[in-house]
Image 1 (spheres, rainbow, N blue to C red):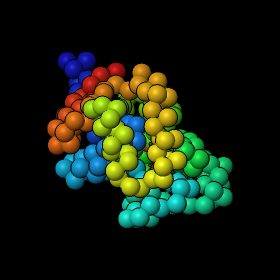
Image 2 (image 1 turned 120 degrees about the vertical axis):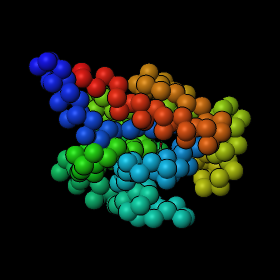
Image 3 (image 1 turned 180 degrees about the vertical axis):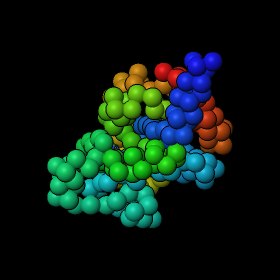
Length: 205
Ligand code: 5GP
């Protein structure tokens, strides 16, 4: 009886807490759209708004898509240990706020991190019971087509992103789930299922 009671108590304590959900993907895999859709249909999920030194793209909102900061401000935050992880991606700095993660987890919300593979690997070390999902495009030609047609990047940036894909794929082993984004609605459904199930996996460990 005591053992059962202990398990139930432990279970309840664990289930009350939010989880870290990491999504990484080569650019052009549709990751940003997937994240937006997930947030629309899952009220228990909040978005981790990263800090970045990259200039805002057209349509991006400060404090919603990212917190856009200068390199100076960013490095000060690094010194003050404000980030759980940070990385240089395509010549810009990106960092995940420690405060946002702690607040979400403690208030029982799951927190969605749209971060690159270096960040995924580092977060896995800190939050081994997080949910780690890697999204792949359906094919190389589809990936190329998506990156080119979104019209957000210069030709030089596009080829840099394409050249980076193999390196990104070498981090696949740090992820628990791979989802091929063939159809957006299906992908969102699958990822939502993964998040729901992931909350109960190894819960008494
Ligand atoms: P973009 O400039 O296209 O918005 O993002 C470039 C890459 O940086 C994407 O792979 C995105 O997921 C990643 N990224 C965004 N925020 C963070 C972060 O806080 N940490 C890390 N490591 N990567 C991030």
